[in-house]
Image (spheres, rainbow, N blue to C red):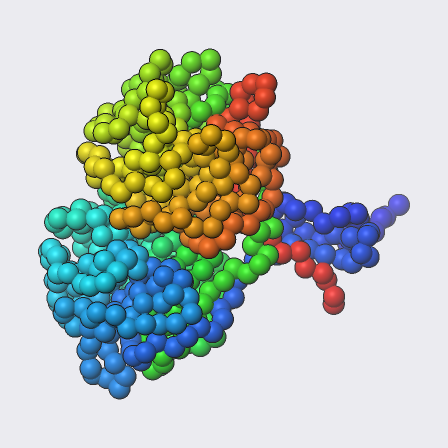
Length: 589
């Protein structure tokens, strides 16, 4: 007998409660409790009005976040009137500060409100200036003068690429003292956008010379073409504090002015909520969860603020494949689709390294020295592992990974185990930690690719703490002094500041993401709790399916992984993957 299913397709499921899993995205079900038909949609986010800038302009450079933003330079309306004006944004109002030394427009910016770098512009300038939150200082010139270029990174690890005259493919790296030419873009482009850090950046769209949708990623050595944007455009802006696997780009010229916003999740671009007003040659920076867009053409002083909205917290953990070697007190790096775990303990310290492609774990090249209880940062092909415990003692040993082998490099000055850490192989940060027989540490150190140097201390001594972010925008959350802690501190590249606490005190957890968009995952007392940070507040989101501490993690607030760890009475091998927040929508028509 022919059935309804045979004629019309799958039967609609009847569920007593709404599922909280990415597997149901796009699926339809009947909620028998509320008597509604429902589906799950990804959270798209939306733009809302912010405060106007003081000087209406286009062609400015930008840096920072939605609540600590920075713009400078540009061409005042009515054009032409090139200026060096600088303004800071606190999420509510724009305030004028000290000007650039060299007025300019169509230059590039990167970094933060208190540690920004601004490069070239205005025909073929080579001038570079850095900002310390108060004043601008001229520093080392780039090798190739250009304008409408893009940038990424920090004041001590910057990247400049593309630009005009023509459609340049030159790419240069900065180490805080000089610019060095690196490998070129595959396709020369100008009026493009940039995002990420020096060792994991994106070059987005632009002109080649026609309007382009091409996107390339940089791994610290070479540029690789990846999936295109949906809409070709130039003179667009991006969430510069985003990453090579998680960012947004918005506005631009198609050739008509555009309001389109696109979201990059590491594999593809998706169109999300449009700007309220079309614009190009505008300022913009921030993250995928909180960004700003301001000024631009058509002439405007208006600012818009991007927000993923209150439903972002509805993400979910799903089971992944087990790691090959169950262990605890290990470390991790990378993303959900390009992850890395290394070190740790079985019954003693191990040197085992495994890589993750989002589906399977594969054993790769071992560490030179087996150790546990260390800190880490970086990517699957450029990771760093420092401090920890080498049976039977505490160490400052540091190793870096290039995707094929581990290399010993400069040791920490202060040996320690259980520190918090973050950053890259050329710009890492280590804070806190413990050494038996010594007081719990407040010491903070910075790594420049070869050596560690002591920086300013954290405010509250701790060990078994978790680090995330970058060397100039770091985050230290939770830990242990005499008991579990909920204290959180932010680092701006110079000093540590206490910020809002975690909701649940814990130690021996793991964190991942950025200073303005982080996850803090489980830890002792093994509750399974996950909290998400938006740069201001922590919000409890979905719990892990398997409680654990002393585990590894990597990724972003959009897509993360957690692997292995300790769940009494023993070590575990389980992996879980975190998926971007979902919206449950009632079908009404």
